[in-house]
Amino acid sequence: MKRIEDYALIGDCETAALVHRHGSIDWLCWPRFDSEACFAALLGTEEHGRWSIAPTDDRTTVSRHYRGDTLILETRFETETGAVALVDFMPLRGGASDLVRIVVGLRGEVPMHMHLALRFGYGQRRPWLTRFGRSGLRALSGPHSVLLQAPMHCQIADGDANAEFLVRADERVPFVLTYSPSHEPPAPGTDPERAIAETEAFWNDWASRCTYVGQHRDAVVRSLVTMKALTYQPTGGMVAAPTTSLPERHQGTRNWDYRYCWLRDATFVLLTLISAGYRREAEAWTDWLLRAVAGDPRKVQPIYGVAGEHRLGERTCGGLPGFNGARPVRIGNAAFAQRQIDIFGEVIDVMHQVRVAELEVDEADWAYQKALVSHLESIWDQPDEGIWEVRGPQRHFVHSKVMSWVAFDRAVKAAERFGLDGPSDRWKRLRAQIHEEVCRRGFDEGRGAFTQAYGSDQLDAANLLIPLVGFLPADDRRIIGTLAAIERDLTDRGLVLRYRTHETDDGLPPGEGTFLACSFWFVDNLVLQGRLGEAEAKFEHLLSLRNDVGLLAEEYDPGNRRQMGNFPQAISHMSLVDTAMNLAQARGPAKKRAEEQPQRM
Picture 1 (tube, rainbow, N blue to C red):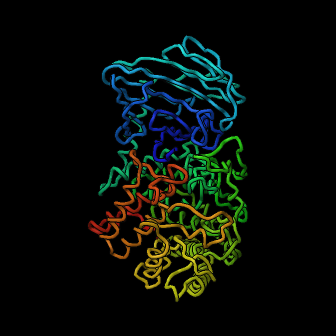
Picture 2 (cartoon, helix red, strand yellow; picture 1 turned 45 degrees about the vertical axis):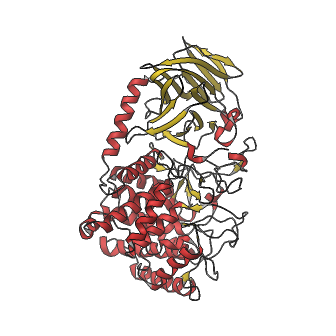
Picture 3 (cartoon, rainbow, N blue to C red; picture 1 turned 135 degrees about the vertical axis):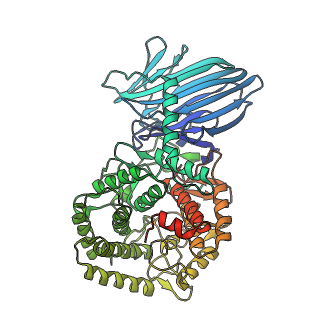
């Protein structure tokens, strides 16, 4: 049975690959995050495409790590006859996209096997494989061309390439796989030794810009590197994850395509990057955001493609059996067409944080922001699908109303603090109206907690964000009560669920893991309430859920001790960084650190 935590990430900031601990690359979409996969064994078998390099002896001991603060993965195989390291990475692109694998002899000698099985179209199409040059192979399939450069003769059989070779101590055996459009001449592959030096220098330089100096810095930097790897460099957009359809429960149907950019992640991304010292990346993300939402405010949607594409139509891929049989496998995400009112609060909040941080921003964009707020005036009181993108009935979600309050609150702050024009008196009235309504209709006095929606008695972990966005202070009795209710009724072995899927009609069969970002939000609430001992213990537990190379999926199944959902998940890593910084601020000279860190309120 496959385990999500057995995978590691490599990438070139335009796409990414997942490498299994046994040396098989089982997922890669070329040339973009959202392109068709050419290695799809992750969601099927080796027949659906993979690239394996491993010892021929199955009786091996395996360990792995990233080289320092880079995205260069080193997997060590120990056998009875010797030891080798498999070094995997993707250089940042020049004219083409390269995937480089170098086998390094460490001691003795180790017989190795290489098997390349390209399958374009999500595992459905074998390429036409021919020899190219002295020892290269070229694979062609429709618009795709891939060139393999190897230092030995490879056998071709049924569209696959195989090679047996022996690696001795101090030998280096490189393989380079290069993608290019099939209508162009094959792109020459990179020089592997120069590429590894340049790639290592790039990531070390990028990581060195991190300004965080508190506890767990290694975990923070690894999470930041992961976030950078999920950023589409040409546009600045960040995908939620590089995968699709990794299930939220074993053999479940809650399987979604996350290879797109969510507006609601915008504020989290922005504040995380600014707090860690990455202002240039924060500005690039803001530019992507404003380009994506530009146009008719009535047409703003919750999800966009990495270049700002609007239509992300959803279909099922019947040719893939799914991760451990979890079906359906989905391509695209129908949530792009949903009404999710909270995103207006996220967009306006982002622009508020941009001004507070004094990032480069075109003030001409204020006119469009006013148009967004004006549109929100006409829709904030309508039901929607909410933050969790339910596929059941629309309802008046408390979180959506809170984020509407955020939009008007930040618009008022923009007018008052930065002297921007706007009907601030009307915005103030709406802000007060929403606040009163949420506190009256969204709070259950009997339960002592904010509920998921008006008229509901169900809990929702999204309400952990209420004090984080400044709607109410953390020491308000209603926030204290909500935190207590969530801890009592919405956790599994100390980890937080989004909501009880068997109690909420979300249009899907019940059952999913705990949501890691929500567990970090819970810790943030503990910090705000001054419960630092509890916060630190829960944070340490969350850190222990990372895999051996420091990566987190979207969810965690505490019963089976398995990561669940798409992997690695940007919001899980963003939340880890934010919580680490919140704890550091609470531990240290609070006033000085508070002045140095950007605040969401």
